Image 1 (tube, rainbow, N blue to C red):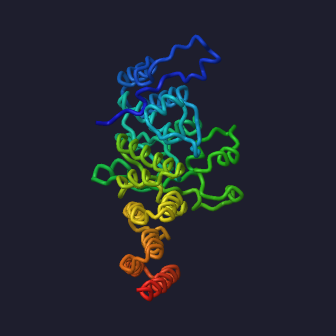
Image 2 (cartoon, helix red, strand yellow; image 1 turned 45 degrees about the vertical axis):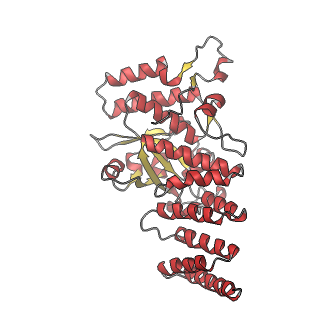
Image 3 (cartoon, rainbow, N blue to C red; image 1 turned 180 degrees about the horizontal axis):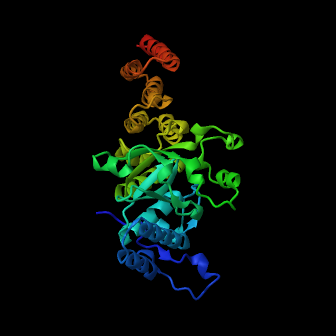
Length: 356
């Protein structure tokens, strides 16, 4: 049975009581404000604009209930208790809470992920329009129909796909900003909108403004965000074995597979596992990532699994595993990079065999 992460979260947040002691706090999911939003929506025609109005109201309510907090080494595991106690979350937490509120009022939505950032998408079946709710960022409560390329996300999910894969054109998203907003300053404080490094962020490189967008239904989407968030926390707190337990359930749906992020978080976890003698677990993580790559991926991401096998085999002296890594390299399309990695693996295999 699904456990609601927002079950103990109160609204408004404690900090607001400091400026207005007369405010009354109540459980967010049972609050009068959320019930009012739900009633207004249920009594409406439930057209696209009605969904947008209800969604924006939910976003405002969630912002009054949570502060924004980045993820650090001391950040606790994400669960209902820690959320209620801290009254703060990053974009993953904001998205989870907003999604639970939208489920509560009956607005169909998707949990979305792009460039290590989470938000909510509101699809409209009648018009095929799409609305973005980047909950902590009011400026990004906007229609994104023209900003999303590829097959309609709902259509992908309805034919049995575990996740919908699209392109998100962030230049189109940014066209929704008010003219009064300094566009460069806005992007600089929200680096997820662009893949450029900070000193190149405003150069005209169209590819840097096209993000890989992954969308999932609300409940599995929320669970997936929680699992990836906590896996990262466990790695930071030097409990890689706990991270592995979570990663094992993400096969085929691991989110952070855009080639321009170099699988950085998964790579850090694998390195930590290998350095602590948990090579078998590192290969499990690499396998989960490999099975989650987008079909047709031609980036260096495809080397992640054989690279991990090669590193573990070299550290443990496992000849059979090194042979398996070589076999996987050989199955990949010819390239200069593949040739270099294959040569290195064969050389290491010769060394291992010479020790027998």
